[in-house]
Length: 213
Image 1: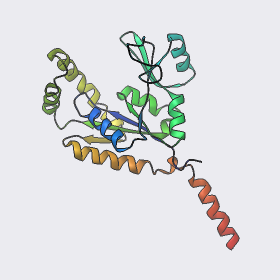
Image 2 (image 1 turned 135 degrees about the vertical axis):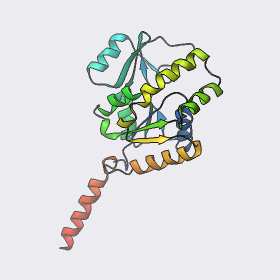
Image 3 (image 1 turned 180 degrees about the vertical axis):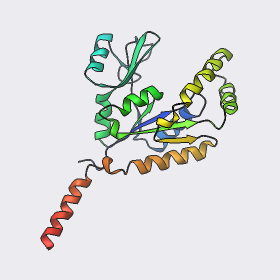
Image 4 (image 1 turned 135 degrees about the horizontal axis):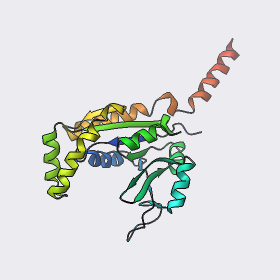
C-alpha cells in the first residue's frame, strides 16, 4: 500500500497574476508532480500526440465519459469540448503522486464536486493590485492591446470567486508566494485522508496494546 495518496492541486488566477510561473516552479521543485492532461474534441495540431498534449476524443466519446462521470470537469470552448479525464488522475494519485490543474473557478467547482473532490486542494492567486495586473500583462508582450483589454475585463469575474478556494495568496513577491505554496502543499500531503497506510499502522498499535494487556 502506498504511504501517501496524491493530491489534485488546483491553481486558478486571472491572467497575469503569476500562476503559470508558479506552476512551473512547483514542477521543478517536485519532479513527481505532473500536469493533468486534458481531453478535447478538436483535431490534433501538427506535432501533437494523443496522451501527451491532449487525449483526442470524438464528440460522442467525450460526451459518453461525461455521462459516465469520468470527466472531473469539462467546458465547451469555441466549438470544441475540453475536460479532465478522471481515470489517469485516479491512477496517478493512487500511486502517491500529485496532479496539477490549471482551471478557472467553474472547473474548480466541478472537480470539488466530483468523486475525487475529497483529495482536491484549491489555491487562488491574487495580484497585489489591478494596476499591477495590467502592467504584468503589458510587460510580458504576448498579447495585443485588444486581447489585454479582454483579459482585464474578464479578470474581475475570476477574482470574484476567490472565496470558494481553500487557500488564497496575494502574489506581490514571486519567491515568497512560491515558498507559501510549497508550505501549503507539504502540509496538505500530511492530511489524514491522504495517508491510507495510517489505518493499518493504528490497527497494529492496537494489537500490540492488547497483547501487552
